[in-house]
Amino acid sequence: MARRLAELTDLPVVHLDQIFWTPGWVNRPREETRDLIKEVVQGDRWIFEGNHSSSFDLRVARADTVIFLDFPVLLCLFRVIKRIATHFGRVRPDMAEGCPEGIDWVFLRWIMGYRGNLRPEILEMIDSLPAHVTVHHFTGPAAVDAFVAGMEQS
Image 1 (tube, rainbow, N blue to C red):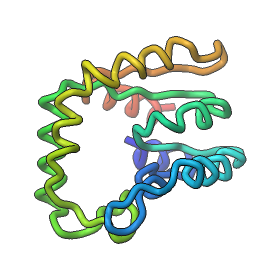
Image 2: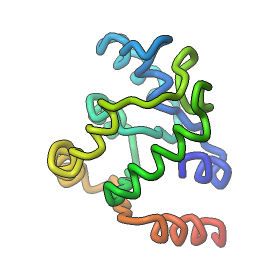
Image 3: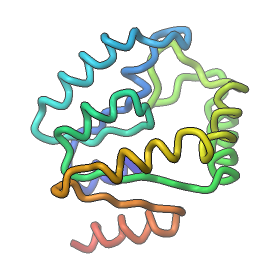
Image 4: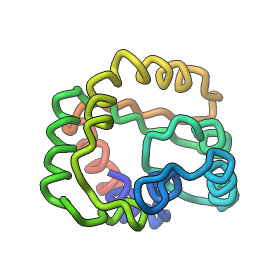
């Protein structure tokens, strides 16, 4: 969706995975990650793509819109498995260099537990956003497609 929105708006896309990870699937130190995100949000316009809630505060402080893709777990698992099959052994365009796609059982378990673990925290963060931030909460691909189609017609 981030790439589609970028095409329509001419906004640059920042993939959080490219900031969060370093080669070999090593997490970048938290403060270094936050410093890199602080640099990006100083720009006038951008689209952040990703779900690293540890930097939500930095991004939302300068955001005017938040899009929450709240899809069913089985759909997410299917899409991740498809992504693994498509890019296995290679680095995806939206991933950090030196992080080839593979089967990550920890990530798959994270997806399985997301609705009970992280989702409530994200919903709480969204509920506490300032009034000037527009929130789009999509629960399926059809809603995303309709939103993008509406933007294309604008």
